[in-house]
Image (tube, rainbow, N blue to C red; front, side):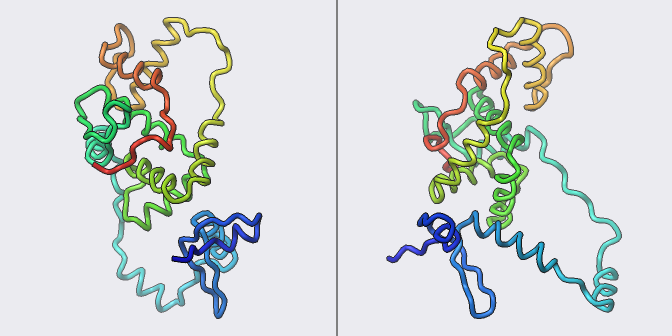
Length: 233
């Protein structure tokens, strides 16, 4: 079977990237990869706009529209974790591909790591990710959706997946190399725990389960994206 390559990549630097979409304008057509499809679609929207309805159509639309549209509720951490363990498998080398149990600390640590990644997406990746979710019918707010998106990109567009990973790693980190004091570490644990759905007291002893989950999430670090299991359970 002949491989269809992206016209945008060929024109730019001669790279033969596999095309996934075709853009048709009149009697002209271009085969494009995901990156160039997103870019050119935005160019067309900026240049042509979305179109303005005539007065009759606009009035009819307003008459049919409900008076108020309820905003969808953000998924809670419990809902997000429950969805995650249904769709994503264990990424640890010794247990790779096995189902996750939401009640285990290992599952919570893996989910927390991916949840933090979703919250810190660079603008470029977020644009591509949200477009992919819309096309696939997935909820972009759920952590598992982003893990599946990364898996799709590694399998089909590894050069873009590597770009995403490099952009994520370039986020500024804590510069001083000295160890954290006990007070600084406790503050960091509380902030991490609250951001990841754990209940922790403002003062006093931090629950052992929370401290352990924090240590697992940060000592293990991120396993190389290309080696992680992104397979739905």
